Each structure stands twice: as structure tokens, then as C-alpha cells.
Image (tube, rainbow, N blue to C red; front, side, top):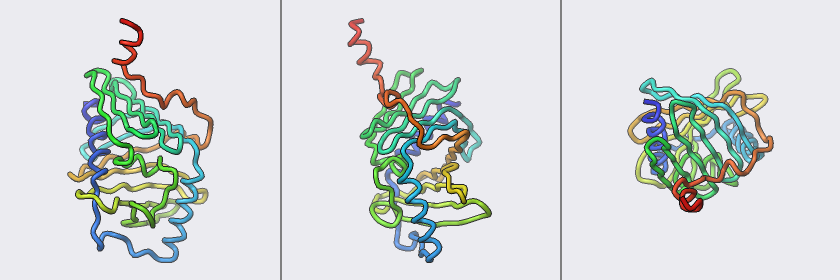
Amino acid sequence: MTRLFAGLFFIALILFGSATTHADQVAKLSANDRADIKRIEAYLNDLTTVSARFLQVSSSGNYAEGRLYISRPGKMRIDYAPPAKIEIVADGDTLIYHDKELEQISRIDLADTPANILLQKNIGFTRGPLRVRNISRSPGIIRLNVIKQDDPQEGTVTLVFSDRPLALKKWTITDAQGIVTTVSLLRTRFSVPIDPKIFKFKDPDYEFFRDGS
């Protein structure tokens, strides 16, 4: 079940890559909205690395956890805790999903995943391919719901921040089928050194032949 859930999360990554919007889906932003979006953009663009434990739940009640590493721009690693034997690696260009138990590897263009929202060099929500669908606030919390502008299917990502000081706490992916996957960050460390080797995917087939086995 954990492996299936992690696989569904990967599918959600792909489906969001085909998100769409119509004119009435883009938020009409107030001056306060624009000020908060500008703060969020500046905060995210100032981040160099993120290291955290994560908890992942879906709208169907499935659960998984593990470790997350981000090095901007372009690099990410997700290691699921047992019993799952799954790793997801973004190496700067490609997002790689590796199911070690099934010995299956899938690769997709990083630009076609919601991970690229956080990994791209220059993050912006009022220009480029991303647009704000909604921004909402509750005491100490800001939620920013974004969509990709020019693709054929619908999906959204909501970034959730604590406020004052601003800090990324979690994100939620709603895919084209309406499945909601939430990733919450725990014991998060921002802008601390991370060994770049962990973002290099080791293809088991390549390692097998390189070793001459």
C-alpha cells in the first residue's frame, strides 16, 4: 500500500504537469495580495537548500513518510521510509522515480512537474507559466493556490506558509482526477549545506555493468 501510494504521488506529479486554467480561474489580486505574493516570491528565491522529514497523506487516507532534500535550482531528493523502497530524484533536468522493489525506473522532464515550482531558478507567480488561483489567510498562515497557465488538463498546487517569520510548512497537490496529496515538512532546516552527491541518481543497471558483473 505504501508503494502504491508513493506511486500515486508520482502520477500526481505528472498530471499536474498538464494543468490548465481559464480566465475566470485566475485570481483578481488586491494590493495586499500582491504584497504578500511579492514577499513569498522573495522568500522562496532566497532559499538555497531545504532539508526536512516529511509526512505525506492523501484524500483517501493513505500515509507515508521519509526524508526530503532540496537544492535550488533544480535538485531534489525524496527517500521514503520502510516499508516503501522508493526514491525520487531531480538532477537538475529530469525527475526520476525509482521503485527498488519492482526494479522500475521512470523519468520525466522536471519542467513538467509541480516540483519545478520550488526548484526553478526564478520563482514567480504573477508572470511566466504560473498564476495565482487563490490566496487566503488565517491567523499566522498564508495559503497560495497556483496553477499552470497553458496546458490541457486541470490541477493545482497550494503552498502553505507560516507567517512572520515567513516559512514554508507544507504543500498540497490536487491532480486532474481530484486526488489530493499533502506533504507536510517537519524539523525543517533552510539554507544549510547539503552534499551534492545525494542528488546524483545511481542507475542500478549502469552500476551493474560498470562493475563488470
